[in-house]
Structures are given as C-alpha cells and as structure tokens.
Image (cartoon, rainbow, N blue to C red; front, side, top):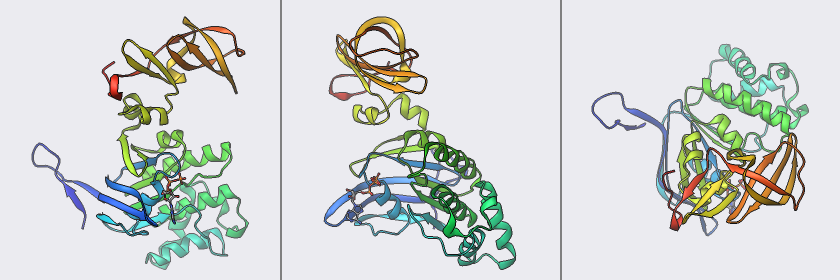
Length: 322
Ligand SMILES: Nc1ncnc2c1ncn2[C@@H]1O[C@H](COP(=O)(O)OP(=O)(O)OP(=O)(O)O)[C@@H](O)[C@H]1O
C-alpha cells in the first residue's frame, strides 16, 4: 500500500510517497546507528543522503530496502524496489546479458528484455559495453552498468548506495552527469547515498544530511546551503570560515569571500588549486578561507571582503536573519 498524504489546503491529488520510514531505528550489533528517522520520498523525487563517515546513511538505505531489519518504527514501500548496493556482483556473462538477467528476474517478458536492456545502457552511455564480458570491465564501467541495471527494471523505488565511490575525478564527474540525466527520466522515487557534496547538488531534488544516526537537516540543495539549521551542519556543508562578530557568529564559504577586499588579515595556510590558491586568512575576530587568483604565501598581509552567502548564528547556535 502506498502511503498517501493529502496536501494541506483542501481537496486535490494526494502526494504519493513510494517509500516512507516512520520513526525508524536500526541496530548494528548492540549499537543503534539509525535513530528515529522519518523520511518519505515521492514519485519522481530524487533524495540524496549525505553525511560524514559512519553517520548511518547506508544503514538507513538498507532499512528502506528491507535489507536490514528495523529495531523500531516501520518502513512502507509501494510497488517494487531495486537496491544497488556498493559492490554488487555481475554474472560471468556479457554486460547486456547481465541487464537482461535482472529483467528476467523482474518478470519482464523475453521479447522486451533486449530492447529494455539496450535502452538502459544507452541512458547510461554504456551501449558500447553491451557485448563486453562483465568480468572485463573497469571500475567506472562496472558502476555504469550497475546503475543501468537498476534503472532498466523501472522500479517504483530505486535505492543506490554510493554509486560513484572509488572513481577518478573525470570518470566520477562523467558518471554523475549521466546518472543525473538518467534519474531525471526515472518515474519512481530515488534515494541515493553520496559522499561528495557536489554529487548531492548535481543529483538531488532534496538533500538529507545525516549525522550520528539522525536527520540533522534536509531541504532543497540551494535552500539548505543558504540556511543550514545549525553550525555543525553548516560546517559539514562547506562553511569553513568563522568570525565572532557583533555578538554572534558569522560563517563563511570560500565562494562568499572575495580576494583583495577591505579587511586586512594574515595568511596562515595556503592550499594550491588549479586556478590559484585557497588561502586561510586570520582576521582580528576569526579565520576565513578565500580563493586568490595569484600566489600568496604564509605570513603575507592580504585584503579580503565578505560577499554573498555569509550566514549568521546568534548565541547558542541559533540561525539569525541576515
Ligand atoms: N555490518 C555491520 N556490523 C556492525 N556495525 C556496522 C555494520 N555496518 C555498519 N556498521 C556501523 O554502523 C555505523 C553506520 O554505518 P553506515 O555504513 O550506515 O554509515 P555511513 O554513513 O553509510 O558511512 P560511510 O559514509 O562511511 O559509508 C558505523 O559506525 C558502522 O561502523
């Protein structure tokens, strides 16, 4: 049964959650690593689970897929669920045969399997791999095929656990872009565990930040980045500068700090980057990180300015209007 919520404000079409966790807790050994999580994902929605190592993302995903049992609460899924775990196996056959095998297992008639397999491989730009033995694929190619197999079966709920882990930068980026397009076309609800914030921004309609087993924040990517609910979440989302100013705390990201602005500070650290350097700059009331297009050295006096996207927390870590 689908969990159906009526939108507030009167009659209309119900918002259908294809997968819904209610107050879910999961134990690993004697430890509760997911605690009282509520999460509902609608048809056509892509949700990214993001958080530090050990936050419970994979465990929650497995609970959503019914792979691990819940200790408390319940999970309701509607329709059929496909779960792509971190290192799924592929049979010792061709790539296309692997995808067709999944379709057979899902009860897709034989006459449709080849077409659907090729369509899914094309969506993941892996059609050139169709005849290759699965055993002879590179890491990036395997991951492409795993995602293709997941979307080929056209599940109501697609759960992906770190589909881009362990790939080099270029392969990673290409796979994220292709997966993003493929998931946009998927009709079901998608939950994807990602490590990299940039992957979450590229893929998701909604980002759920998990910390220590609980949902610490969630929202549309831009909104979440513009207004994280706590300093801890802000730091995780890339706010790496902190100034104690005017009775509160200002948090900054490199994108919100401009080089050669009016505030004088001392460079305390320099990290080389492709197009310049990322410099840590100590100001009288804290430290910010700022990109400079030219080389700067530790000990240099430089100017910085606070631009867009600086957020302010009052005492006690409460966000304030800016
Ligand atoms: N099979 C297991 N047995 C015991 N403990 C486990 C098991 N799997 C995970 N854990 C523990 O549960 C906690 C949550 O792990 P989980 O893999 O869900 O986190 P995660 O957020 O996905 O982490 P990562 O980003 O490192 O993959 C961790 O402390 C982990 O050590």
